[in-house]
Image (cartoon, rainbow, N blue to C red; front, side):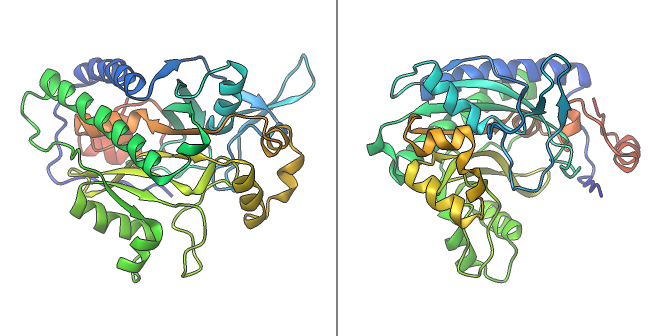
Length: 337
């Protein structure tokens, strides 16, 4: 069931025409700043991968990928849900050295995604991946990378604000990142749900990186779901900013240092996914055949929403919406693309 939040007295700052121009500038500017900050080159990426290859991201393990048959080959393919695994294969295939990486436009269809102000069945993000040395598989390197990404985001916001907002939106993103683990959040707010904990913490700290997502907390629940075969659950996290307009913690990126052989072995068992060990990707990784890496995804439409002070993701991307969302937005002046 869709959920629609209408901020009180909401009026878009930009027209649809101005919004489209601004989206183009955001994407160009941020790509340059991200690639410069992390030493990444742009590559082309697939829209679909072979079914049964183990390359598709299964997200929380319950989302159904869009699958179709190929007339010429008689095989099946799946539209990607993210490129978390494909990127690591690409690092190896392209011979990218330690200290360098890649980024690409990732367009996905997540047909089981909920529909609300922040979620759509169409997902667009910058997927990036970087080769690291084993000595860099630590919290310090993870935090340094997070701070570089936040710096690129804030630098882009400043440029876009000068070009398009002309001082109409006083609030600016906080460059100082507050780091906290999911267990520390549970200890701080044991009576709250994981999402409520995020809201309380990010409202206070403005910009946060919530670490160690995927494993069980001491309460026996997970802060959030994570597939067991890309992020190391002890070395990952989400970047969140406080969204003044929607009054909520606003996730921009899920990222982390990727599993090595040991972490993958343990997480497959913990997640009850030992059946994946014989898939081509997993066999290659368990055998030490892929480079060590750090990577993640950064939401394109989410970033545009945040920079342009938009109330609904449909104001910055074209998608399909249910009747309640369409009528609710139309009646309150939210112009869906």
